Image 1 (cartoon, rainbow, N blue to C red):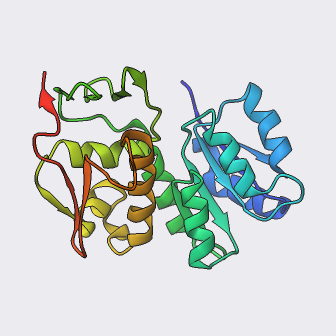
Image 2 (image 1 turned 90 degrees about the horizontal axis):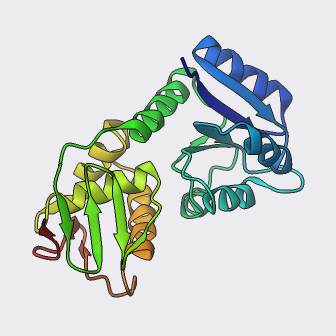
Amino acid sequence: MHKIRVLVVDDDPELISLIRNLLGKTYDTRGARNGQEALQILEDWPADLIVLDLVMNGLDGFALCRQIRQQSIVPILVLSGRQSDQDKVRALDLGADDYLTKPFSRDEFLARIRALLRRARQSTSPTSVLEDGRIRIDFERRLVTVNGAEVRLTPTEYGLLEQLASNPGKLMTHSVLLQRVWGPEYRNELDYLRVFIRRLRRKIESDPSDPQYILTEARAGYRFRDAALTHS
C-alpha cells in the first residue's frame, strides 16, 4: 500500500526531525534543506504534500513555490516564521494552499495536513458536464478546459470552482465558501478566498479584470453567473 509522501523543506534540521516525528509512521516523510535539494528529491520521489519554509539560502520558499506550480498541483503548506499579511498573500498568490506560522501547535499542524490531503483526494458529487462553448467543466472527471485546452487546477482551486459552478446564480457567501472548501476553522480567512478567486479568474476568464463567470457581490461573497454554462 502506498504511503502518503510528505516532503519537508526547511533549513532547520531540528524542525525537519520534529515534523518527521509528528507525522510518525503514518506518512513517508523526507527532508530537504533548501529549494535546490527539494527539486532534486521531487524528480525521483513525487510527494503527495509539501511543507515549505519561506526563508532559505539560495532558492527560497517563494521561488520554489512558483517553480513547483509550473509543473505540479501537489498541495503546499507554508510553515513560516513570517507573520505579515503581505507574506501570506504573496505565498498564496504564488500557489501555496495553506499558511501556518511558527511556532505552531501539533494538533493544528496535523489538522492542516489532513485537510489538504482530504481536498486532494475528495470525490465530487455532481456527475454532469457544464459548458458554454468556451469553458467546459466535467465534474465526474474533475476536468476543466478553456477553448479546448486543459486548465490545470490545484485541488483547492478545483474545490472552489466546483462550489461556485454547481450553484449557478446563487450567492455563495464568504463564510460558506471558506467552510465548504477549506473547513470550518477557516471561516474568517478572507485573504485566502480573495487570492484563490484571483487565481481562478486568471485561469478561466478571458479578461480577469472584467470577469464573465465568477462575479463579485460586494461585501457578501461571489456568484457564478446564471446561465453562463449549460448541462450536457
